[in-house]
Length: 338
Image (cartoon, rainbow, N blue to C red; front, side, top):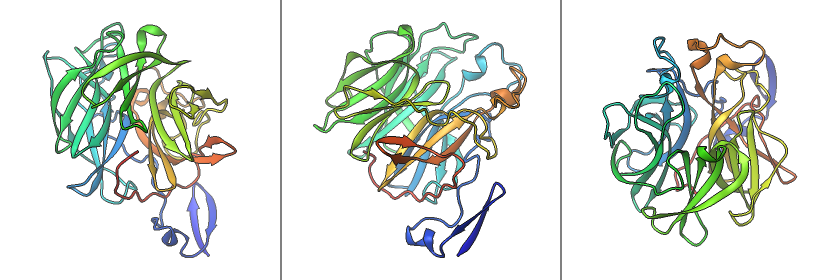
């Protein structure tokens, strides 16, 4: 047996247990990643880069350390951050910001990317805000960008969605080879809508997908079931479906209760889910300074800063589970995401 000490607990693991599953011997650290520029990493998406043979994380990078920001300008005015991992997602280092060639106005904001790779081309669906604003009462759109290298992005179109105030795209390939995009319609009570495409370039809005309120939808297939997770601002609400059209809400929310690890005592928000082999991993963000037990002063840097965390998903009796305090071992293998 080998000892593993974590958060004051001693766990006994069989010798070679991690090696047998081709996993690292050490669990991932908490937090998994903190942005070194603005300390405001959020809304992650994880994608494999075949040429570089690395995993990359693209994320919203909010200006948490800007002490002069008025209102909510601190969540505006930044490009998408990029981090990389050479060890299958176990550790991450800052790489760059995405060079997105869509800046029709001098002051602009890039939020919440979703990225898929298809036939050697990366496709990003990005929330674009035409300015840096002190409040939330302004338009935002979802735009389509393409790239061959994941760093330099060319504008393709602004999606013709139902309103001019939409955020948080999630794209998933349907069983028939076509594509579906879910997003948050802020003008309809922040409910989840969807659109369909045959080619990733031309989209038709289909209307409301869920009655529930939430943002950051993430759809994936695992355990012979389709799942959608949305950020309900009090933990992650889970839905399941057999056909990607009709969704059943599950009662239990993920990451609602605080964790014990560093920077993990607040609710989990806007996640990505990476299904890799028979395992599924939840990449989420927290505002460490917004813990219920010891909240930081409003508008302080401590209350604004956010970090990326990682937990493994579990499955029990038809439901998803996630124990954020359980040691997480990860070694993602190359391959297309479903």
